[in-house]
Length: 358
Image (cartoon, rainbow, N blue to C red; front, side, top):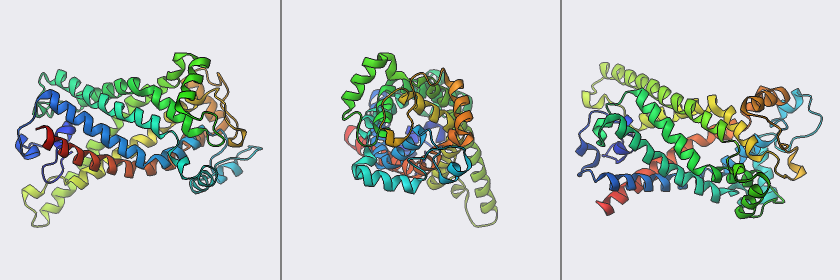
């Protein structure tokens, strides 16, 4: 992404670059491949960790909604034929209940495995992404990566996401389990959850729900890149229209950093809205058969779902279409601060690391 003032993000996301010289982005000589990869991986991991910690409360609420079999809104509860009650029936009600029952710390439940998941995920993702783009372009130079077709960029991003998911998935599963359990705790520590899963499910249990996760990545990446380019073209057309009716010069006719940020945010939101049902299915597989206190409603029984398609059908049958979008409000609300914190943290961390290592 191009930030005014020559931000290092020109290298971090090559597909967002315009025809700028290398010096325009960095104001210095580009470091070696290994050093550049180390800077990107370290800065991305730190930025991801900060973003995950800041937005953890919304993530906890989202997970509580996703794993709740009962309706997650008062409106849906009244319309359905559900005979019982629901633990969480709205975002504000869930916030008050979690704070009253678990205190402020409840909003950061599962944050340690979440950090252990997101930091290696980010490092693996951008390392593999750079390798794939280098292979596709036949060169490790960033300016050569810019010339790749959108299709190759999409494939590289999807493959990098798959590699990062496989490498960090057990921590994602542990995060979901700890964040969903509430009070009283079934698992007091991450270690106790890990031991119980391995004892009851075997090591394969650490990858429960991996299939819908991998299936989710491909359309998510495609939609994100595709809609990003669409919003970017619309913004450029708008800038040209403004330039034709004002005194803007050609150099002011490009996209500003804020416009690029809004395009990326809108693309991520669109992709999230389409792919959210697969995230719900993933969460159900992750907590399938695990103990849960009765106050949080019915638990997902062991072998409740035979496969991903069966899970989708069962959720539609028992919970309706709204069941596939449980947690969509906090998930969408989370996208804005998560994106802002990630980009700002990355920019400052990357610049700081460059000043030290180069």
